[in-house]
Image (cartoon, rainbow, N blue to C red):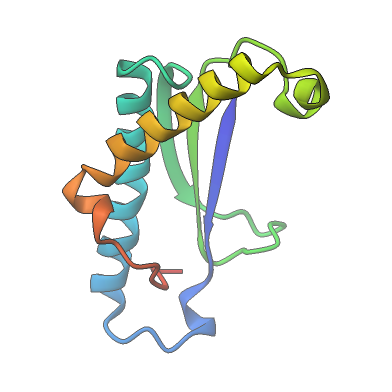
Length: 122
């Protein structure tokens, strides 16, 4: 499984000091990588394999910015979309508890608990 993140070209926005914004965007991406690793560790996510960042290609819809990839193992199981009409009450409760556990875990991480969305570099 691959997660792709695009940072838009910085020339299109008034971002202030670009070096600071680029560092912030890189930190946010590395936080995403850490979160994937954490989810794997607690048994609620795919296995982290690798990550890479590079400049977006000239034919990319966001060329001039950056593109970041997180490579993960395939997630086993069935698509919730495919089975949602047949989920029993017990299965639904189990899903609810798992999601609550994941959210409580994420909210306990200081760097995520108070993070407000920002416009990052690019």
